[in-house]
Length: 124
Image 1 (cartoon, helix red, strand yellow):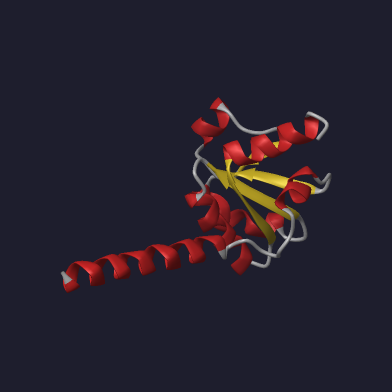
Image 2: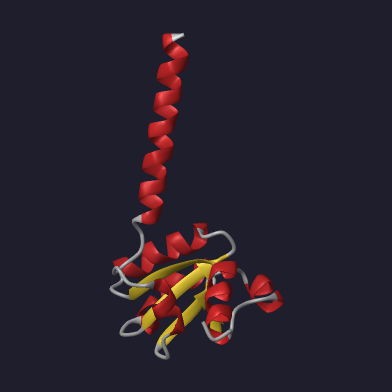
């Protein structure tokens, strides 16, 4: 019984710390809705070109995660929001761009960024 309880506590702590790490990638602290809707932001879809061609958000450019390191220099001095399907590649892109001195924000997913844009255009 003690072993099962210890396992549950250990698994819970692991999940909590994993969530904290994933959430800690946003930089700097800002209201993501304001950033996405600002006129000077560069929205970067880090999914593969086929996914980008199928669907993306208004005014987004495509820089696949595999190319984000080599494109970091082009993004310096700009306010950048990255997103993908579920947020995993976006988290990785945020880390890469942060290490390269880019002002980057995690938009998480295509659906999240799209919902924020739709909210703006709906007059909210």
